[in-house]
Image (cartoon, rainbow, N blue to C red; front, side):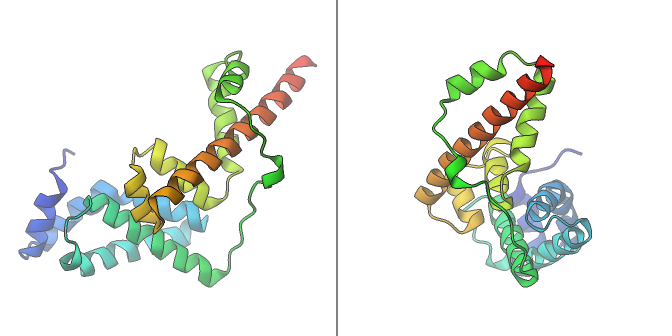
Length: 192
């Protein structure tokens, strides 16, 4: 389905065309689900929370001023709703230990990875992403997979711009360290 620009739908909804909201739901349901799932890690709770997100967005649409993209505003609602639900459950995540993070260069990691097929490289990256805590995983995916800007991520996650930059740098270091570790394991397994 080809979608129009978001302001078109927002304007129609605010003029009373409630059916136009279904286009926005269709357009963003996968990303809202992804954001919420990365935090809650439970499919049933995620589905329920994603519905809450769209309900909140619909009810608050008259407060949307267009200062940011509609998707940024919506993803911010999704993030905050999921975090609130997560806090209520008192879910604790395990982070990679900071002491394990060394200063590997991207060139060194790329050199190590170049000996693997694209399939093995992707598997190593996916396994490294699984080691990140949920917030870090979400932030890196918003930046690289969804192409959100630093400013958009800051707004979505309620952080300062410089905080997002620092966290992205640290997350990259964590990923590089973990990928390096996993590639060494892969090399040892292939040696036998």
